[in-house]
Image (cartoon, rainbow, N blue to C red; front, top):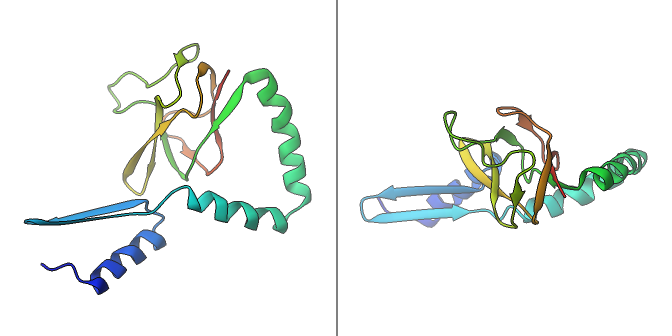
Length: 148
């Protein structure tokens, strides 16, 4: 099988239409991996949401502004998917309340389109609260846990 430009464009379209971040294919000695930067999506989503409903974001930012101050810094989901606290159902959770973690430590997995995405902590500290239960669906920007 030869990977031609038309085939690669079709794969890119599949990634875009299905909110995937990566797709890999192998055929004998040939292999191809296409990745979409996840950082680009939040920047594109934020400006669209703000102008649509001006009063709602003002109220939404007022409530969380007081809560994180007493709970710590919020760690939010970078994507829509399903939250998993451990690498497998039988395994020990990545983190527990009261545990001290470092920046870059894997704290959970968010599954999106059958792709398991390890979520790393953006900062060091102690886990104060885990806000979602194992197997629960999460939205982009939803608080997963608080770290102080």
